Amino acid sequence: MGAAMRRLPLALLVTVALLAVPSPAFAHGLVGRLESPLPLAIYLAGAAMAVALSFAFVILRDVRVTADLPVRTIRVPRPVVLGLRAVGLVAWLWIVAQMIVGGSSDADVGGLFLWVYGWVGLAAVSAFIGPVWTWLDPFTTLFDLGAAILRRLGLEGWEPAPYPAWLGAWPAAAGLAFFVWLELVFRGGGLGVVLVGYTVLSLVAMANFGRDAWRAQGETFSVWFGLLNRLAPFGAPGGPDERTVPRRPFAAGLLEPGWSTARVVIVAIGVASILYDGLSQTQVWFDLFGLPSLPLATVQLVAFLGVIIGLALAVGRLVGIAAVGAGLVPIAVGYLVAHYLTYLLGDGQRIVVAISDPFQLGWDLFGTAFYEPGTDWLPPALLWSVMLVSVVGGHVLGAWSGHVVAVRDTPSRLNVRRQQLPLAALMIGLTATTLWSLGQTIVKEPAQGSVATPASVAAPVEVAHGVTRDPPSPETPVGEIRYDD
Image (cartoon, rainbow, N blue to C red):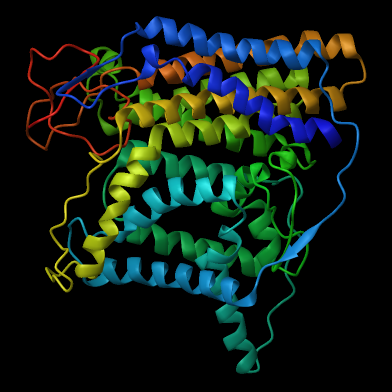
């Protein structure tokens, strides 16, 4: 992998910096009202052009990896592993305890741990640092504790059945689709019940197929975080010793084998779900569909996921499944950061509420039960820059990794260049679409029984799941943010 891998971070940094530097286009001042000096179409065209040029660069220069990296490993300290396993188990027990004795308040840890710290926080750590879910995973910890108790009682477990090769990672894909529906469509309570049900399913599957086999193929979060971890400098353990992990250059894991149709579908679901989340809250979407009922919203989500998955698989038939998978992972990570950064930094503060009222019984143990999270301390210009760099940087990195894998798997240089044109078109289209959604006004869902009204709030501060402020007054122009004094 040699010099190409060493030059990748520098090339990526230069490319995205060229988009973020011009302050007249993206800089905002923290005054009473903020607005983007350039029309939306101009920065969309610039971002799409950056992705197109990145494809032209890697294709025309025929960037490829020619050498294997030496294998290096590190050993994670035992206290770190035990500490992470304890944290995962405590979080699981906390959610179950609230389900049994708690009520409904901002101290709810089910949504906090699953959506905020899990879907966003753990995904980001898995992509940028290492495979933390390997040790945080409470389902595996519960299984290991149960197996240890049975051994102490003198009970021997049965021999696990071979995991069916035809099943592959499809159970994980189905699980991810379910959790996406739960978050984006259902949006109700009962996460504790879902957690208990999923725990029972996981334990039964581990007992039937073996712990490691189910984690590698069927357990939704292990497979999803494992795919994102291909980007990180510390990879997942490759053997029975879960404390020994490989050390590699950033993004080198994207070039590793192991891609399948099911795994590409999982990454496509991740990309499509984030894109749908942004689009479905825009003013344009509201004008077209209003606030749909649960069945109609389910149909919309399934149709949208189907379109993106279909496009990914169609491109995969031309350039190869592995090339599409390697190209989509950085895009998924970029989208996740761009859409959910303020969600993580804002709603993540609710842990101080939960600590004061751990069982949702109206306690205020540390005087923080009525703390109100906020993101006013975040500079809007910085947020906008991070969003832009995340989306475009993810696509640029995806263009590189997709091309390198396509070249490796296709013997004909001429054919691989032609075949990558649909992949380039797909990425350019996704870039423009997601940045367009970030630049639109969003519609806040009204309280039950009230009338839906659109809220004109600009995306640099108000993203799909961000902490929202009160809607501006009717005279506030679209694309501007009005701050209350």
